[in-house]
Length: 90
Image (cartoon, rainbow, N blue to C red; front, side, top):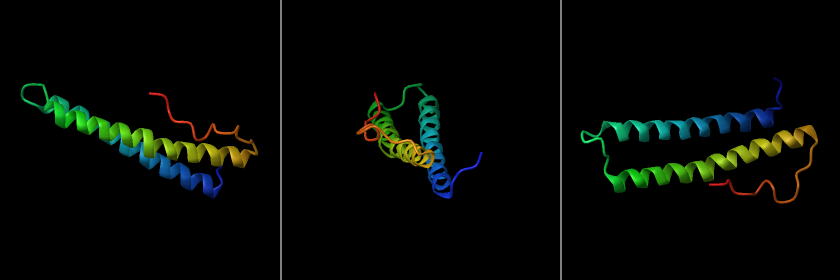
């Protein structure tokens, strides 16, 4: 696949962000199973889950939107008004 430098740089940044999100999810999962009782401290885990969710819905989502916009620009496809700024469902 051939990508313009601008799209490739954004795709690499997005890949890094997705890797960070995956790492957060794996650490949360390991932590959930590492507690002797099987139940991690509820407040601490909930705070970590919320931080991971905020990272995914904020930072990672914006990286995806950036790559999408650059790819569409490269293809000469215009965006419908407001669609790029829409928040993810959930």
